Length: 221
Image (cartoon, rainbow, N blue to C red; front, side):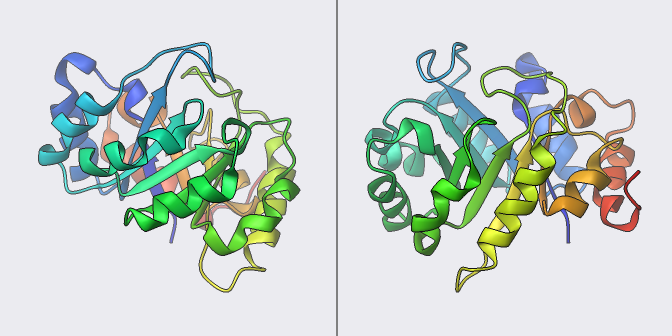
């Protein structure tokens, strides 16, 4: 089953709780929370106080994506804020295994992401402590970018890699995802779709979510 994780970067920040309720009512499973520090990526988004404030407003799984340097420093803080999945970047961790083990030890699922130019093969040594692989189909750091087709082979490689583990590893894709390309990424191996504008800016949010979920039943172009 395809899961949808709307990115709150695309919501109306003045009415964030209302927007989150709207996507939750539309049937999404996750809520994607992009935390940027202005160092690992050039942009700054939001942090712990926003996630803490949203947590009582939603029962969704908080799919928290840390685009920050040395994220192991904040594992416990994001756990207390309400994160359920904590994804860190391979490129941002001085000790990748230590970061993933710390996330799991805190009671969260451990996700790992790679930038578009980083091969998925670098994750092979860590399969035993990975619960989710996030493939970036845009350069991380900004919302509203266009989907990069070269991410499709990486999704397929991530799926192949995940099948070598002795537990379930979800394959997530983030960047420019819409009903127009959802079938392509699902066919390539994605089972969690991060979509921002395609969901939050839709005239009919429920219809947009349903269209994304239906991607597994649509033949890719």
